Length: 327
Image 1 (cartoon, rainbow, N blue to C red):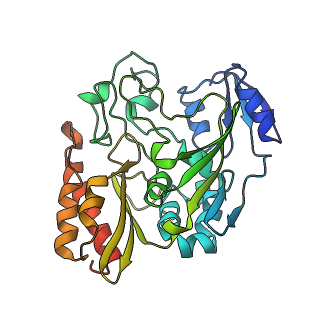
Image 2 (cartoon, rainbow, N blue to C red):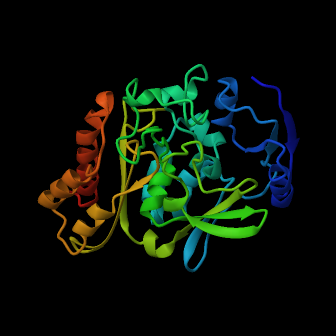
């Protein structure tokens, strides 16, 4: 582990100022991913800015939405009555994340920014374009079982590992960001970048930017939703494929649809073409199967991860059947 300085701050302004000054500083909150990356030599900040003293840990309901403070712990948000009742897809995604111990420590803001589990990214002795730009991507032809089949590029096929962000895409959530130039809002769908030619740039956040809250519109909270995660073991494991589905329905007819998937793409991945085929249709076994078959359109499997094509199709189909009570 490379030596680093440490400072604790109590206000967003102090945190932003510290990380925007070009000191090589990075934020730390729950630390559940950061500590691993430090130990593995993947990250080597010159300074860690501890933001645990900033009071952004509330869950509140307004007339038009639900606000989740970025410092709220995963376990607290998963168990919050308003979240469980109004956006069960979010509560389910959080309950499926990591372990109880990690959920008690990890924050929702940090969870959105967790790094890929790609074997080459996590091994500092190997090349990795995401870790060291221009060094190469061994996963293209190597150990790529857990890597992405959607959204990859010739420079990177690292899969985004999280659960929460996938569920938030399905409920049209936004992140509230404070930075050196003021405050702005970014949809969760647009928070993460595709790897393209610069896989080391993982999000649209700028130096000094601090996620302060997540906003979920109540219009989305009124839909029926479900989160389905498929993994190698039942606890403390990342998704091989996941699906977050949110449907506005009148009886068994779909009026509005959001379908997002995880574990199979380089970022939380929204299936707009699947959504379009669901709207104004009656949810039944045939529609769920047809939607599932379209879920993997555009997939580019590589060797060991080819099984994810079929797995993704069945995961989306199963999630739709669960919502319709047809599973």
